[in-house]
Every structure is written in C-alpha cells, then in structure tokens.
Length: 126
Image 1 (cartoon, rainbow, N blue to C red):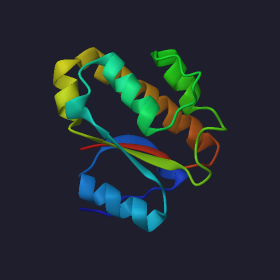
Image 2: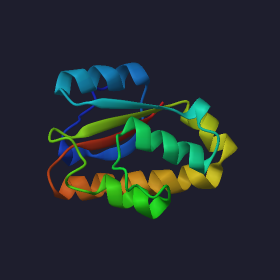
Image 3: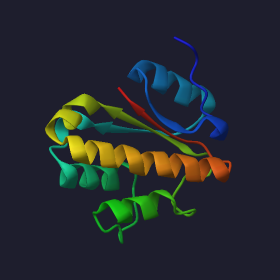
C-alpha cells in the first residue's frame, strides 16, 4: 500500500486500513482521533460520539449544521491538524445509510475548508 500523505494539500475523506492511518499519523505527528462505527447506532449516536472524541465545544448543537460549523472553527482544530479514523464505518453505513452519506459530505466540506487554510484535516474509513 502506498504511504498516506497527511499534509494539507491531500486533505480528504477516503478509505484506508487502520494500521496505515495510525502509522502515517504517528510519522506526521498528527493527532489521530478514533471513532468506532460499530458502537454508534444512528445519527444521534454518531454526533454524540464525535462531540466526545473530537472534544467539540460545549455549544455544539448535535445536528449536521452545528457539526459543520464546529469542524470549520479555527479555534477548534489542533494547530498541527488532525486525522479522524472511523473504524467499522460500514456497520454504521448499513444501519444509517443517509446519515453516513451526510457525515461524509460534512467531513469533505471541512477537509476542503482546511485545505484552503493550509492545515491537515483527514477522515479515513476503515
């Protein structure tokens, strides 16, 4: 498997094995946040877990617009950037296909935003 590039120019939402993501994150010295799709249920479970895992602000409103706002808040993203590793993503996709697609759209929008601002933001689905 080719080495994952975790600089801002390569921000994205993509599939990659967990081991490769963890190794690339360590090599790039980027924090890797883990989200376990097998434990999420549906939308509210996902949003609640994202709030915890990513330490989103207390004012996070537990909806898609609030997630987008928080992910694109310049005060939220760690200075070095971040990597979100969503394990068992297919389990969530099977249980909540529409919410899965919406989450991917929100993550892709955030990745593009941070690319424009020169900070790494990656979401990998394992």
